[in-house]
Amino acid sequence: MNCKRFEQQIWAYLEGQLPSAQAQAFEAHLQACPRCQRQIAAAQATYRALRALPRHRAPENLVAQVRHRMAQPSARPRVDWARVWRRVALAPALGLLTVAAWWGWQAQQPNAPINTAAEDPTESLVELHEQLEVADWSPSPTPSYFISTGYTR
Ligand SMILES: [Zn+2]
Image 1 (cartoon, rainbow, N blue to C red):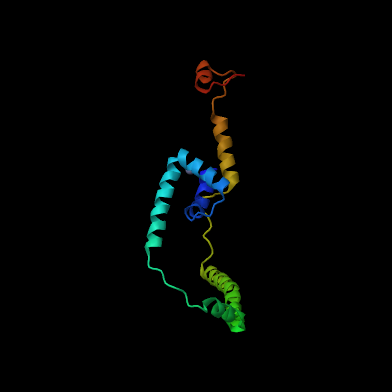
Image 2: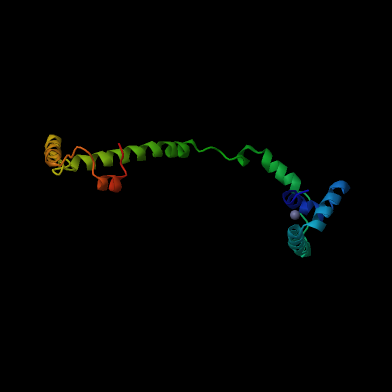
């Protein structure tokens, strides 16, 4: 018996509906589990409150009336096909409308401005080449070069 199983059986236990073996397992868990002791205290309070409510007798022929109503075809809910169709048709229509609105909005926008910051890539390559040419290329790296970069050959 675990707490979940206990919860499932609380009402059957309170109504005396559990077979004796299950009732014993239920009570054994109840003895050992404070959480389920609180659970059953709350359930017992609810159970007592419900039993204290005034009782009314159902009409003698209630069951016969319900069976009679259920047997009639008008008691079954009818499928309103027009309503189903409207719902089914609405989703694609909304989708199309959204696409059309987006397309119309796109058509109104001027072409995206060309990014003037991006220059001819060959220019930056030429510039880099010039910088490399003026750089001081000593035949062997200086000690400070080793220290600052950790580079070794
Ligand atoms: Zn428990």
